[in-house]
Length: 258
Image 1 (cartoon, rainbow, N blue to C red):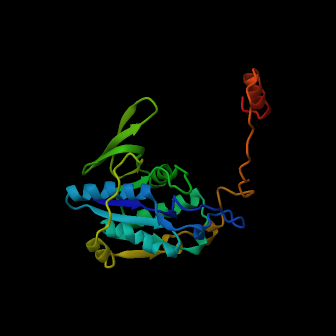
Image 2 (cartoon, one colour):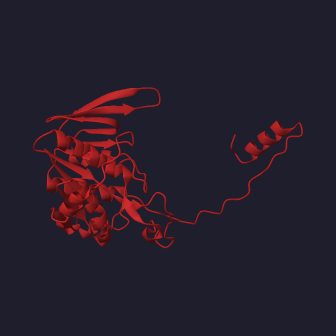
Image 3 (spheres, helix red, strand yellow):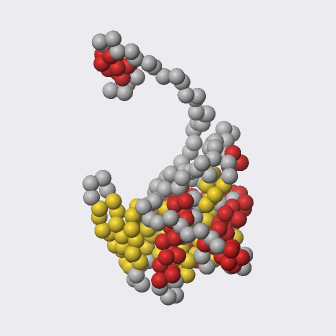
């Protein structure tokens, strides 16, 4: 069985986050870049299964700048067998549509039985990539799983809603996404870090995947404007002198909050 885990380099959650007002893209230099925590949890799901079943190969897949190679290698140090890194300046700022088409092409090229990804990245928070990939790959999709069970020919799990939990399952090949309810990822040890240096690490461009230049210039979403977030104001203080309720109601109506 071959499991592909999508991993992503993101700005550190605890660091400063800024947008480049020239391009509208995240300013990657504003804070340290790290492997997204939800990516690590997705990898842990794959590694846990690989540790309990024979013949399971775990492959990392990421679309990121060349500088992300060191971050991706952390996944190899954790236990993945190999990595595929799509690094092409022409893909910078790719929208979800182009990202999904590019990743789907890489997944087809690599071959797969199961694709595991997080439900939301901590930078873009699109939340639709798993479904888009399943559509492009023409395989079943189970999203936002809070538990996962993998067998030789199927994957199943639990999806939690506001008032209940649903059991879902799909035959392989399939694409699934997981939530933060899954266990924390293991930490790389010294042996894993040293072994990661010798593991297969393939770097691809858009051309390697058959993505034509004209495809790169056609965006399915267009940014029309961008502006810096205004500074927070002091707010409005209402003193209750017997008419506090009226003042609050008037404030809500004036600001179209009621």
